[in-house]
Image 1 (spheres, helix red, strand yellow):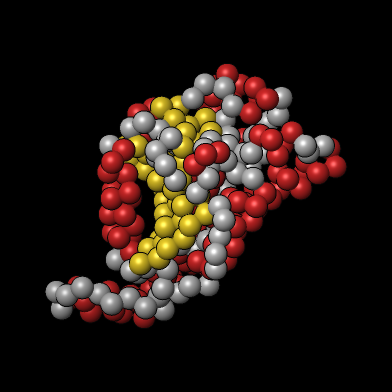
Image 2: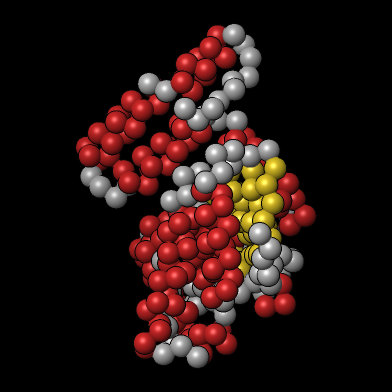
Length: 260
């Protein structure tokens, strides 16, 4: 399928989704969100896909935010639906069933930071800056930012950066746990791909169950989370992938997982 605002390619079980509006600093307008969600639909039904990398075109921005001229024309009647479209996009990323890696090559502000936070992992270039500056425009983060930032870096820090509008540089992002790895700008995609390929060697079913165990376990009390973990572990224990993993280990060879 041809897209106007994004590019998508896949190779060896790893997909790369590039938001391609560099003149607009890859800002998220309604059509871009629609195209991202279309790619996510494609990825979700592709059984060969094991990891998705999301990045931005150019070297200035991952996604600099929502499209300001578009927001200007939205009133009370359309505002809720506008916010929900981005929120639903991020929900779909978070619940894709495979790990996602945000390769953050520059500014990840507002909607861009929210998109990055919906990914499983975040790799940042040394020049990257993240933040939620929406209050300076008279609005609040509407694509999940008030919820995910607090969960990732804690309530106090999250409120500081939302209320002040200060940006979080790459080093602080790693220190806070907002990002997993900081790399040189010219090594961003190579390092992100290395991480994706490492994950892609793991049993797909075990990866999926781990994503669910962590996501839903953290939303409940510890005992309930442990019961959830046991139930999901049981699914993997009964899988063909477990049989293949053990056979490969004993046979000193690489496993050939089928996600079954």
